[in-house]
Image 1 (cartoon, rainbow, N blue to C red):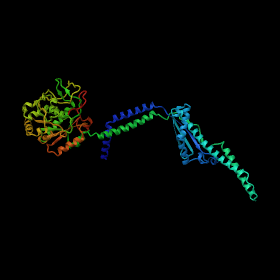
Image 2: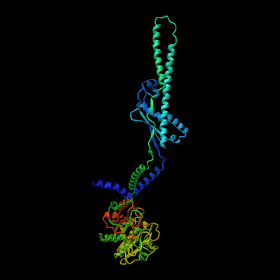
Image 3: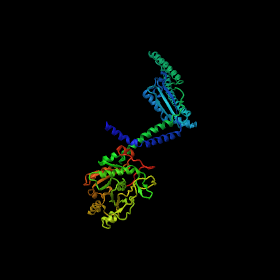
Image 4: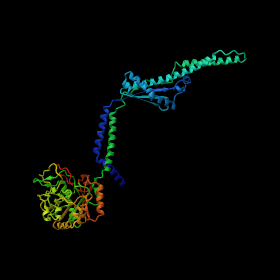
Length: 541
């Protein structure tokens, strides 16, 4: 039962998440449908009925080809008559006559004849722009068909009349002289045949004046309300259709979107615990002296992360931060954490092992002229390249702090109790993996670890470049960094697999950026409200 509930939740979660967008799409479709059909030309419908039947006398006279039988037409015979009604044989003549009468509305209408079940009635239905035009078109079709049937009927009667008359004339011719005794008998037979033919001729002449094979039951009538358009009805249908299609699109896009959406996804993919969930923050908060300080919602999660690292087994001192994709906020997280740890009285060193996209100089407001590359190549000694980050009185947002518009990502100012030093990436390197794999890098890490409480290493994503691979076994622990709505689950899985089959330091856990408030609370983390006007968004690489 729980499995079924989970499956249903996974299906409807993407739809519910975008419910307002789906509703907006449905409303737009409904309004658009209403406006479209509101401006369409109205179409009116009219109908009339034809009855197919005739007297027995007419049946015998007309024959099967006339379409007027001595019995009621049903089945295939009636279907054939409907086919004639719907054919160009009737339609072309009707429309030509209507155009000649300058009745364009009726001439441009549509007609369709159908059989009423198993009865001998055929309904002619027409559609036109006005009720009068629809009635005119229906009556015109009925009259044209009846006229055609009557013409066929008369031709058949006339053919039979001519044949009977010819036979009578042949019989009435004087027979050749004969002296046989059977002459009297032949005369009697001839008289009977003549009488029969004369009676038949009289009947046929009588039938010429009557015709009841196909009859129009009543004049055509039109509905007062237009058949179409129906803007309200179509708008309701459009709303339902838009709602359905938008929901399907939301579900399909959610399935095709391979980015992680929840803390549970991160935990499941990395197979490690979530140490901290950072909410979103729009922009950094500047101190009155112009230095960067953290957005208020980030303080407590970062302090929680520092406490977790401090209380961890063995208290790892050298920590390597890795992310599956660029833009997950790893560099910003390191700068923020370093400030918070300094506030707690720790001596923190930030080493930027990313020579390709160095950002720590900007995040920590230091000079980026010399750095790790220069130290490893022997151009500059470590003491000269390591820079101390300026500190301010307190960490966090004070009552009079102003939040500017714009900015890159939030970083945290230290209180001056501890210290933050940074060794930026430095100049360009021809072969970064080879430089980081040398003994000089190992010795540098050991030396820095002896002088500082924590060493935070910023390295590029190992799935993009292999720069970070030599550092995996050289640190005390690894922190995975992900970003909700940005990190792809495929990349995260590959990173987890890479660390699983490569000799490396233990994975301490995962830190997740840009986590929605509901997900933070659902996971069990406390929610720290933002300051006035503080929209939460953590931006950074």
